[in-house]
Image (cartoon, rainbow, N blue to C red; front, side):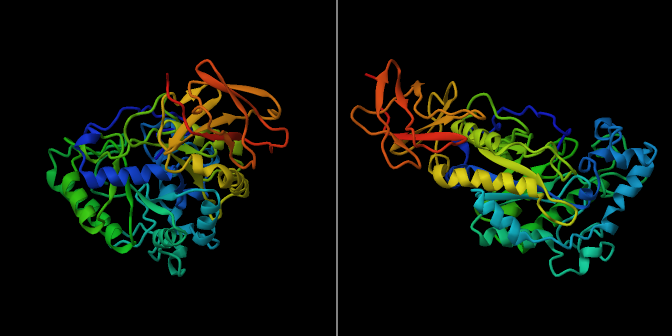
Length: 456
């Protein structure tokens, strides 16, 4: 997925097709999906065995993907051919014997997540599902894990999360750098695009189109209900890389009625969800959108990664919801298939906060203003919610707090979520003033629930 580890990918525009022109069934499905608000994004494949970026180090032009401090790069003499040969062979040592998708799903559910996005195939082309199209897959005898009863990893993941009531988002890279129909073995690889002129060799490109459609049909017919098809590899688009999205989408939706498609960074009729990466838009976008952020510094597992604090994740989730978006939080499982303990602990603490305050997150809508200083707002009929963000080590108990921009209806109560008593309030200018009770528990953020007053 990543363009560059830690980079921010600018993508704040709406899809080219106006929301009002999308069919009614799709608008309803998007409303449902956006109400989920919080999801888990898992990058996992043979690349988890190395301290390197997923897929991208294989691209000669993307030199950022091979920094000198990566052991797997320096040990191979900074030789790209040597590095690539060993990278392509990682499937032969991939044996995640501790893989337990039920444990992943239980953790995600406790954390308050409502959907999962799983990388069925990243740009390097390794398939984490059973496919008849290539030997470069987890169920092939070349991979030690192929004989394990859980070897069809994508099926195991989707089934486990679905059983916990989570929606399913199927990540799939349109580009495939292992396929000879995308990177021909007869030509030099230069960048992330096909290494041949697709217009001069239409027959080879058609083989790739057929290859992609076959894999997609396998995923759409053998893995239960799929709610979102999350397509990466935005350079794969007309005119030079036309994979016939109209035909592909029609086929996918014939098998999966109600399917949402995120043909990310492409625009047009099949970018139902806009997907800013490693950032939150400055303002609400007015379309369905999902911010994809990592819990650590990397999408995939990296030993000793630096994880964000639960406070940071809660604040990020609040800001995302206040601006009308979803937060898809990226975590990489280790080579054995285990979510790192530090990541799991963070998710549990986020879940503890959501168990009390999730009503102000799920199924809510943005409201103007969406923010006033350290306070964010959401609404869900008939209530409005105000999130007061707490700084590290800060104690706001018995302190006077003024909230600008919105105020409660005259005579109505202000309820502090998780606290038994209403909070007294006073109208002040274009806002209102409260004092947090002395017995309120410390929190990453306190949430007030009230009926909104209307301007005079």
